[in-house]
Image (tube, rainbow, N blue to C red; front, side):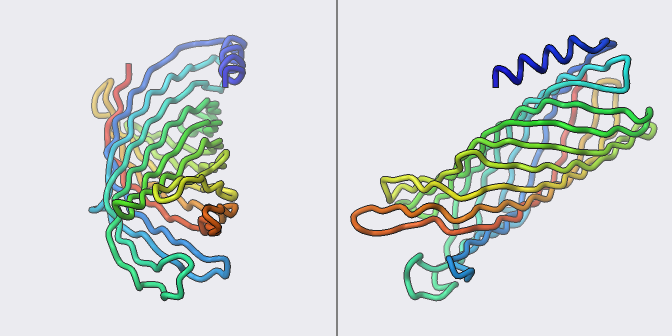
Length: 264
């Protein structure tokens, strides 16, 4: 990470700089989740689902942007996101002969994301911008199925972003695509001593957003994100002669976003 930051600042110095700006964003989030787990035969084991009324939180970010005398803009962005709420659990006990739907309950969830992005934008014109970024971050999901079973999923992550933005008058509209690849994804559960080392974990996100300039230094932000996350089956975990595994899962996540940007 230190080498990446050092290269970034050398890259900045190499450009003929014109101006810089600071952006601070505060965004309110409402989230819906559709999480499914499957056994090794591909049959549905359990689901977690919620509506936009059930889960929500906030996102904070700071962005430093540098305009050059070329068509390129440079910068970096630091982001923190926190979401919590309840999901409806429908499933069955792993390893049992009980059918899907034999267990129903409510799960408490906490999701936390920390990321840093290094941005490189290309201005086709005063109205159209091609955005790109490389990112690194950390993700944690605490899933409280019961008082004796609390699962914690966590990993570091590498991200690539590509986007297109259109500016007209006081408005901006854009779409971004993010690909996330997890580094050493794992899951710990309170009712076992060991750690599940998960299979390949990645996600794809389409982010649609708008921005309106309310005042000289204040913008209104709104958006809608759609994420599909995949976690492949873990390596086996053996404890007290029993073999356990964390099954394959898919998670469809939707986010409604509204907030403001303060520019200085």
